[in-house]
Image (cartoon, rainbow, N blue to C red; front, side, top):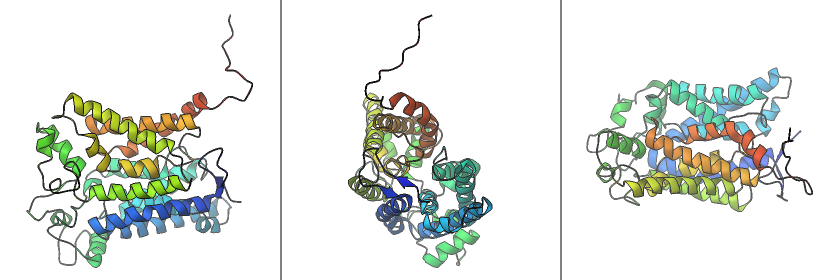
Length: 360
């Protein structure tokens, strides 16, 4: 039996689960290609490891539950979960961490709750948060863009370091993270957050190689192009009615508005809205993570509330919390609030009025 998903209760073109998942995977291709061009082949290797782990895990659990394992091959939900996790983690994360995170996402977050349609949390983001909390150092080891890297490993060397921790020539992860000027590079979000914590101003924090001569003064080298590539894929999904426009619009608008308030109040201490939009996974999360039809709100008003609060949480955590990106945490926090949001935003049946409390 196939599940049928649609992005709106009034959507006339209804697609089964497999069709929806394949279309979302198709929309991810521009972003994945941008990541490969900018950060190397690691994302493809991580995606392969994650997809194999996800399919095997889902098939095994379905078999244990007495259901046909072929379902895992025909339903692309496990594949999509694996890809969402793979593009969110550092390209050179050790292979066993990728397997652990994918297994947790499928076996615990998804199947333990009963499978697709019953999980409370977004599986990919729950797997990401588990890895981030368990292995914080490894989960922050992103490579510099290849245009700034001192060493640009080929496919074989990338595979070797993922499997062993060293390239064929003996280079370690720390050496690969060096920029051409010999300075270990951090992600744009990490770089600015660290600078602000050391009492540098925001304009001073942007005076780094990763920000200079880029698409925008606030855009980290390479990261903006990845974000824009996922934006293209996300708009494609909205265009073909696979996802609803309410969540990404509300999420991005709320994030931009709140960050603008902070920035206008003190432009030396807070990052600009452009910085938040173009760096990290905000655009990716708005179209590919928060719009998960299982764990997101199901009403139009609810989607607006759900998306807006995710956007607000992202800026609050990025600004005042200990994690620079925060999209995964914001999504999981709001996943818990979905039943309450849906309860207060569901439309009333025609002819019925809201129930009032009886007077004693």
